[in-house]
Length: 289
Image (cartoon, rainbow, N blue to C red; front, side, top):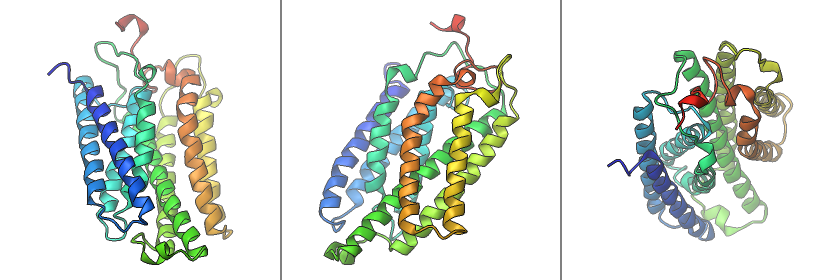
């Protein structure tokens, strides 16, 4: 039905993420000794509705829906939610949904702000495979960083419980701190690789007339983000940065990413008024309703 739009589907998905978040609180309070399948099914229902929302938007645009800040954010959250469901099928990672749900819920509330989804014209213009590669790989990198932040929070919780000799640490079904540390590092490494590919693809796209990549706030922000994660990987692997500092750094880096993602996008002339080949919405003002 026409009234049941992609935004309605996403709103329902966010409600399921909220229900999963509430249930997660009970899992935390009980030391993760309760049945986790209810939480998994709640998150799975949210991801299913989220997928339907993206399919409806993609079919409307006849392209990958990453053309404005709302679509970019929902794509990022979808990748994070889907990856969480896959990880939760592993024996020692079944409670990852309890850590991912609050992130999906809070970021989903942000994405529902009307100002993030200005109306398209009859059909946005697209530049082809290179632009899609640029957008998709960068958003997947953010998803990997988000999962790394989830794993880092699980690591810090386990470490705290062991240090204070809580019985919960002995009975917990969470993975060992050694495995969580390894998973966090690998997810950051994967995200860094995807971010590198995305930035390299974006550098090959022609900028709008009269604009330069080197003075664009979003490009500068992306380069700084690349350097932050590079420093984390090098300091941890080559200079033996303590595990706790590495985990805290991963958490803080992703929190800063979430808090500044929309702000830098709005400040970017290239991403707000793109030329052929880059940006979030290449429809001219004259074609908007």
